[in-house]
Length: 205
Image 1 (cartoon, rainbow, N blue to C red):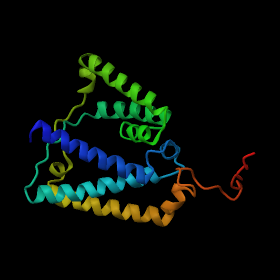
Image 2: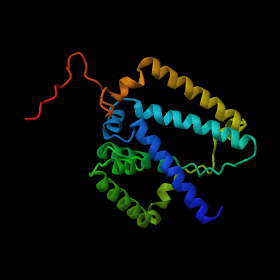
Image 3: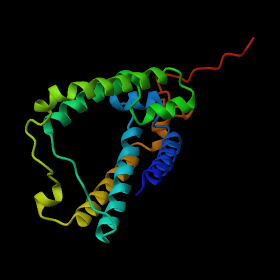
Image 4: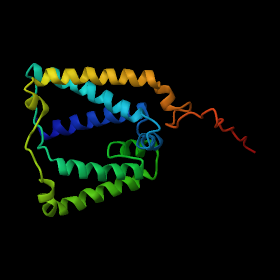
């Protein structure tokens, strides 16, 4: 694939991702913070649905030989520490690298500061990586994948996990319908409880 085609494909996929992200309201800071506070599970539902759909697509592509997998090395220390730092940043900012662009498009002015902080952090890590490399590679296990550990074919394992995730999503929907998660005003806030009556609109003078 040429560089131009790769750029065009990336733009198309990014536009589709942003459109679906906006329609699912997962970019809303209230939804993101609600997930971290375990008050709302809309963000988890959307991500699990995306993973399940991706597993089905990958199972088909790999199964028919239309694509091949190229996993990165398994680095437990880097994954745990990096995930912790990223999670703290998401909880503080109410945004992640994927949602910050959608927030900018939706008119959240503070999202520009989140974007600037993310770019500054990426630049700082680029200069610090040589010194951090020994810690990043600690306990590294190479390109370790579950299908090779279990001795199963990737398409079969991927479809099995997709079914498991679909069953999990069905159970979550039975437990708490997604409309309850989204809120009556579709802004990511949970609807008022019985002890908290809805706020009345104040008429303009």
